Length: 558
Image (cartoon, rainbow, N blue to C red; front, side, top):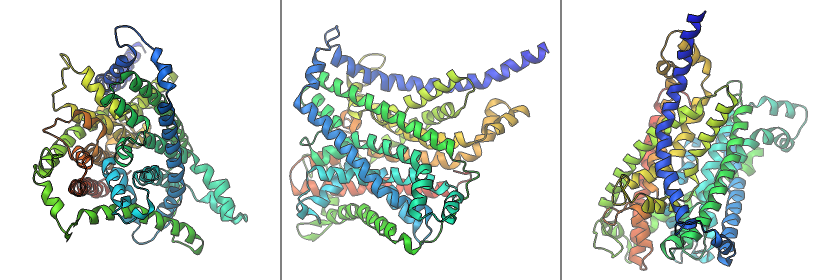
């Protein structure tokens, strides 16, 4: 008995020890490259001369401009979330509950805006709404309406994928039973379908609100400094006025809001996972009926809304003073074509690609470690709470100001052994921080869906902990790993907030080049910005297309 007990103790401790060691690497990375820079930014604002000074907090919060910025951020995020949900729910139904030719293509089109760089989305809507654009007659260029439309364009994929995936897995037997008892389709939706979808709707809504309130590139490109959100105001206070206390106050407000949004999303996601039994679900997509006509019309209009800015960008990049031309693309090859250009487009693309590769490798290594840790379901209540805290901690970079992180890098990583201000490694590290939450959110649900009894059975048969885990989880990781790699690479290619602070003048990425071009007046600069945006969009969409093809053809379940 004693020998048996003595033998079992190490066997129980080994998996726990392995999980703990896996957590140490990403925790160390998060501490050094997120907590330290953000904390350094806050200390510079609240502890300027070796003593705590909170006297300016009231002054910052009492400013008329601060009130306008907070009101505009909350108002635009609320409007953007409401409009995105209104348009996204009918589209989710059409794409995930109906069967028709071209459905897979339409799904890909709807997801495309989410992987596009935010600065490219801003350029798209400027091309669409400016005086020379197809919708220039509306007078919405440089207006809050343009920003709102860009928010919806960018975030539709969040609603469609989150709610659509849940809708696709719902068991239709409850709906069919209610209909057989005489309930109308509207009554069935209100009493059966909507309550089942509510957790996924709340989860999607909180994420959309978060993305709208932190959309730095879109706001800066479309509104300039005329319309300020918390994100753009932090940028203005740090770069133009060196008001670190004002920036610190806004960063704290943003951090608190991010924690609240992520908490709501996590609870909604947990409810969704708890109430959905995918194995028992019997969801059968059907062909459209006459009663689906209004939803099909709405879905068609939404798809047209997604395609219009994209097509406008491509067409206007091919227009010059003499009609159709490739002049803007040729000019990108000449670093001296504009004072705004430091290098040619080929050099900028090479910088973007090499940086994105490094960032993706960092994000994937850390993301897999985090996913393994937070996907475990410990029995002890304290351990379960600790896992939840860790899960939330690694989501924070998703919503905290990239400007805060970028500026924090410059003011904290400036002395040995972390004197990295002039190092090229800072840019991929910053991009990896942004991509890390998406990697975790892609891989973790798959690991959580694996029955832990498979791993326990493998251990009972004598397999070491690593072999037991791989036996249970390895077969289902192929697709998620490919999808996470694609998302990380696409996000890194288009990251602009932190990169705008950290990129060296002689090594700009394509998003930085685009912003430099649109910041200078002149038709030529705008034309080259349009062409560069097309190049960056093609790179991003091509990467996602290749990854999607590999993901579909890989072995495993998703």
